[in-house]
Length: 426
Ligand code: GLC
Image (tube, rainbow, N blue to C red):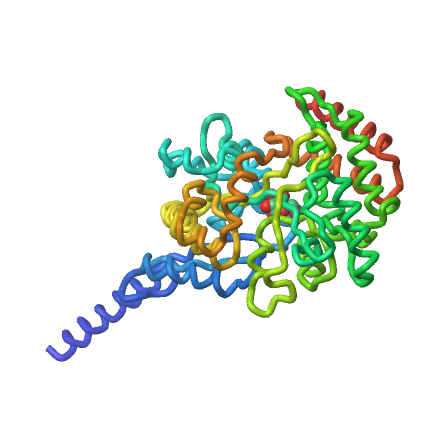
């Protein structure tokens, strides 16, 4: 009898031991826990506030833990990581945050899942048209727009007021105002932007092309070396060497260094994405209450233009937890969480309806103005071959800004190289 009891006890003990070992991850309340890995770029502002949002998802979804893993800040480096890992069929991450320019490429390569079922037609119409077009490839939706970006002009409204200037509408006016203010405020730069050889440079340059009536492609025709583009690129170089309102350091600058300079009160104007405003308005900021935001200027008689940016959430085709990953994407792109992100880290909602949300507008009245900019924002070429185009134009734009090539030489060379790529890809 005694031996029988011991044997039964031993059997039960072994049974539970095997059961618990066979369950993946840790064990919470008898239920096995799945760990989702979420890859994204560096969170602007306070990462702790973002973690609190993720914690809320974990509380609402017992049994799912989220490990959020941060990639380098630059979009180009993040792209490199994904190309290597997705091409290598890595199952090591589930949800990924994708730049607006990558989705057609990732979808074509079958690296990410078709998520068309996640968005009804009504829901699709709530997202801004730019990001919605960016996540759609051959009629199917491969990612859900998470937050939207557009290039905007930041200006020191206290200084413009002090010296009697309205915010500039024309590029040349910006130059005149900047020159006049830095003469009287000697420790300041006039106008800073992102001029390093990387994706952000393309976003900046396109804003000058478009606001001069130029473009990269016109109805599939490559028009890179147009006279509009040549004079726009010349103007960017002139900002540095002729008008001297832009310091040469801009040639090596990406978003965050320029945000720090402006945030320390050291520049009159800055081109950047909208995330920086929340940071400038935080307690303790050197320029709290002194910053204005407007659409970027244009060349005379032409329209202002902003480059569409922003990030979208998709699922790795080799994810082991696609259902849970969908839950995380639904949560992070929901109106409630997009609103929380706007209030905390400053990411601007990709859902139009939130720009009419009374609580949000009360705290961030500039969202009304951003809504109009987001509706008119222009996209970089939406094609699976975009990365090939950008890899050609980045060094050419950079060579022209640093004076190694004239704008005409740089744009002719870019035109020739891309024509060649198009011939090969046809
Ligand atoms: C921002 C934009 C992104 C763009 C990048 C360039 O992250 O959201 O679309 O490609 O800046 O640096």
